[in-house]
Amino acid sequence: MIARLPDSMQVFERGWLSANNILFTGEETALVDSGYVTHAPQTLALVRHALGGRALDRLINTHLHSDHCGGNAALQAAYGCSTAIPAAESARVAAWDEEALSYRATGQQCPRFGFDAVLTPGDELELGGLRWQVLGAPGHDPHALLLFCADEGVLIAGDALWENGFGVIFPELAGEPGFDETRATLDLIATLDARVVVPGHGWVFDDVPGALARAYSRLDYLSSDPRRNAENAVKVLVKFLLLERQRIALADLPALLASIPVVASALKLIGRVDVEHDPYHALATWATTSLVRAHAARIDGPWLLDA
Image (cartoon, rainbow, N blue to C red; front, side, top):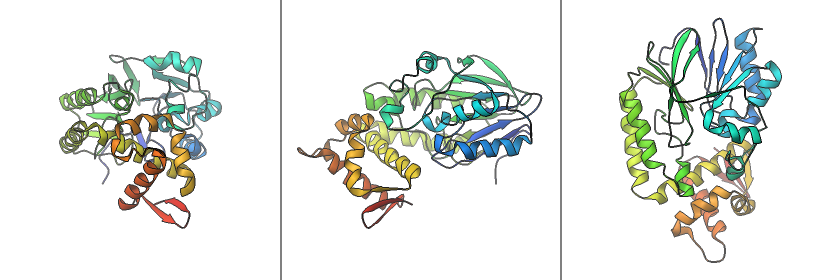
């Protein structure tokens, strides 16, 4: 059963290639997060159907990973909607620095988009006739934001908190702090009187204490050995590629991994797959075995398939 949300909110649960979208109606309409680019036609169809002929006035991003903003360009083209992004990313978006924005580093796509406004922790928004606080949520992404409606006890958490965990802690792969920031974000969420959480992926849920307990446990596990975060990142990136492409030739996977810069960073931390002459072949074999064992992928002849 989905936890109760205010009548002016509607959540489109999108699976794991695209982030969930949150649509607000009222005097002004707004959408929080826009999914991945390959799902942009579906995003437009969902928004058009839900709006019933009304315009989309505003678009807001919790953070600028490709699965949260890949539909921005399509929505802007269709509606001319005003777009607000985290303030710390504004210069990168203005210059469209794909390396600084993580798209080149992760081997993912994101069509260029613009913005009209920026969001900074401490700001307040009105969405769906409700007041929302903008809060910082570093960890998974150093510039990520939370949106919290204290009057309704609703938290839009992005990838800072899911029902069972949180997003990959990417800064740690680049040698930048992320574990302590993730813990601080969880500590912040614990201070909020949130009765229901809209995560970036997965079901809307109301067992906030349980989710926090699981997130803290997951963080303890990852931070106790940085290799674990690196291994998780590689598996997530391969799974993302499978979700996007549906199948990858096993023979092509080593070269594909070698072309993704963040995988090179992860490889330095995953010392046990370091093979002198062909580390990416060893990494591809390990990732494939791990995903198949977890029933997240399957092998069919020469192909690695999504499962």
